[in-house]
Image 1 (cartoon, rainbow, N blue to C red):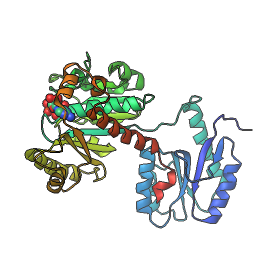
Image 2: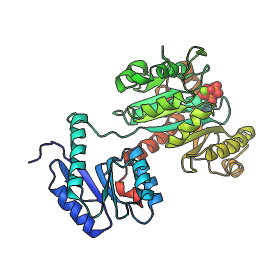
Image 3: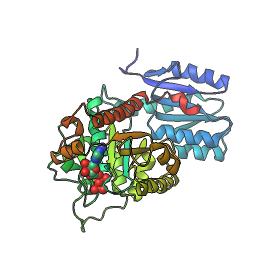
Image 4: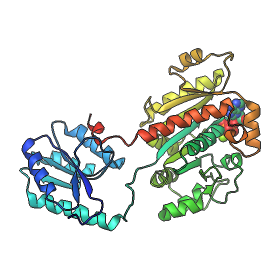
Amino acid sequence: MTTQKNPLSVQLAIKTPAIQESLTQIIKGLDGFTLQKGNDAARIDVLVLEIGSNPASEFETIRALLQENVVGTLFLTSAKTTSDILLPALRAGAKEFFSQPIDPGEVISAFQKVKAESLVKNQPGEKPLILGRIFSVLGAKGGVGTTTFAVNLATSIQALDPEKLVALIDMNRLVGEVPLFLDLQTDTNWEEIGKNFSRLDAAYLQSAMTHHSSGVYVLPAPSRFETEAHLPADSLFQIVKAMRQFFDYIIIDGGMVFDDNLCKIFAESERVYLVSILSLPCIINVRKLQESILTTGGVTDGKLRIIANRFEKKAQISLTEANKIIGTDISTTIPNDYQLTMEAINNGKTIAEISASSSVAKAYEKLAESVVESANKRPRGIFSWFR
Ligand SMILES: Nc1ncnc2c1ncn2[C@@H]1O[C@H](COP(=O)(O)OP(=O)(O)OP(=O)(O)O)[C@@H](O)[C@H]1O
Ligand SMILES: [Mg+2]
């Protein structure tokens, strides 16, 4: 009989048949663990992986698996026990390394440690930790609609996925406007939160952030220079990183603050939206910014999405021309409706609140759908990482 209500899942990724067989026998005899049969589990508590012919790329995958929290504990095994295998294995985050042939005592004691840790850590029914997704928004120029975009994307995601926690962070130090756009009175900002970094947990964040009626939690930018605050240069990035544990979606209004914090946030973002309008200076900026964003590291073509805001079919510069100048296709257009967006901004309301049936509201809804759908498709099966 199992002493644990929810046995911990174990997956074997072993190439040598004899090793697979002996590990299977040992794990089958363990209490509190269950061997995963298929290869499509979204998260695995314990993965035992045999390092094979391409250790360098396998270690990269391992690091990503642990970082994304797809695997709880990782054990490695290999026929080779030389330092060129052992050291990178431990650096990549492996908890134990089983030498071959397998010593059952070594394996049993490693698994017992995992079970003991999980009993201390996990309250009954606690869900496995899946990190929140970051969606960053950057303006190709001032005034192109970056804040409108970030605010309406966040509130549209929340409307589609009401059970999830959505955070909206304003990076625009001194000139942040997100609270104004949502008619919120706020008395804290990310600099304040940075000072209390050691206290950062879900309860503190939810009490410190401002809760909008849409459900979105807002984290405003500081509205003055805090001379007494000696926070590390990347403190905002550290806050965002920590927030991934508590929020499902994190939307960043990066304005035009293309600084070190934003570069690091970009690298962790699932998508980076570059908001533009179809004017020549703006399109030229998009081209330049695109180059910089793609060379900062961590942002690939697939992550970067170019948005044509205030789009009109009869505009002087067509989409095709804009695509040619930029060298990449504009992924989404948001229709031009100045009166509607101004009414929303001036009343501290979302566009959907003013007119849910408007083409602008529909465009944001469609965009949010693509975000929620892609989020629901994840987390992917563990073995997709090894393809
Ligand atoms: N889809 C749209 N159609 C027409 N006007 C729009 C649209 N979206 C935003 N705007 C208008 O663009 C103006 C600027 O909007 P917003 O403040 O969101 O831009 P921003 O890029 O964040 O500006 P800033 O650089 O000042 O932070 C507003 O007057 C808003 O009404
Ligand atoms: Mg703005």
